[in-house]
Length: 220
Ligand SMILES: *[C@@H]1O[C@H](CO)[C@@H](O)[C@H](O)[C@H]1NC(C)=O
Ligand SMILES: *[C@@H]1O[C@H](CO)[C@@H](O)[C@H](O)[C@H]1NC(C)=O
Figure 1 (cartoon, protein in one colour):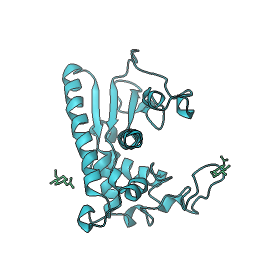
Figure 2 (cartoon, rainbow, N blue to C red):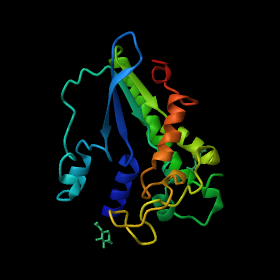
Figure 3 (cartoon, rainbow, N blue to C red):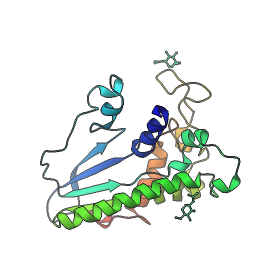
Figure 4 (cartoon, protein in one colour):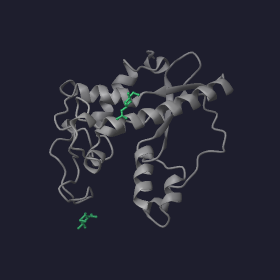
């Protein structure tokens, strides 16, 4: 029970973030600052609640940024990533049935789970848009932008999609563990989190399209 709820927690939250953009001035689409909130970056309480007396109960984990007016008018809320493509879950939920995998080698049911989560997220964002009509709230489609990368790996320089760069073969990803020579051609950093190369491909899809958010793509 404990281990399955740990997995469930990690599946949903390992990569969920929320970006808050402060506009430089009204007439411009340039932003003077970007603040990022969320698990794996700054946790707002879940990890401290789930893992009492662990490293995750030390600040900044468990610090809440909510219940305070920020004055922010522009929010980008990313959905979850294609979690059926990450080494940790490909290993843990390995299947003998080829039909469980898509043409990129990702677990279909797991990517469906991301889609299910993201559909609920978008429903809630639509509700908030109705409640706060003067606030810009955008959904960032990390799922499909990520799947685009796995479907066009060569275009993004990825040659090692399913093996973590840091750690592996029984070694942890820590300060003395093994690291691959070229993180730029790996999709996964340590089995859970994407590499900078993957995020580059995902953000390219979000900023330039085909998953563009209009107010992010406008020229300054
Ligand atoms: C994935 O989602 C599609 C579309 O909703 C559905 O047709 C399919 O049965 C799902 N597959 C799995 C393995 O969950
Ligand atoms: C990294 O992990 C290995 C194996 O668990 C351990 O022996 C080593 O001390 C760790 N290094 C650091 C810097 O934590």
